[in-house]
Length: 118
Image 1 (tube, helix red, strand yellow):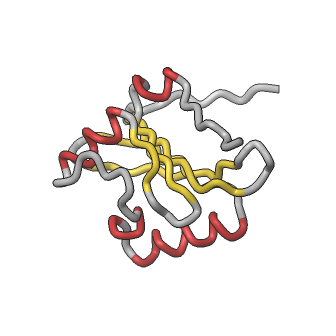
Image 2 (spheres, rainbow, N blue to C red; image 1 turned 135 degrees about the vertical axis):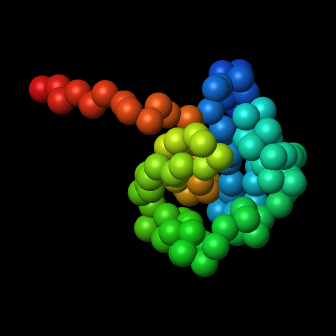
């Protein structure tokens, strides 16, 4: 019996871009914010496209490393007057095998509080 993929309803309407790729770097999910972000760059619904086609050599190396070694990658950018945090991490199937990567891109304030908790 084939495992049914389930994407929770909250993933569609989040106020941040959610893009999911498989281990072949093919886009398998984009929420509305992700589609809007790519539409602004001449894309839109890129389901089935290879994410490597939209990244430079340095970024491709990071994606390959994540897919090989696992883990996550986080950084901030400034683009079109907005500051964003990008968080990329691997995701796994229910059986534990590597499924691919998920990227969250969220607009953050220029100044953001930082708390140290014990």
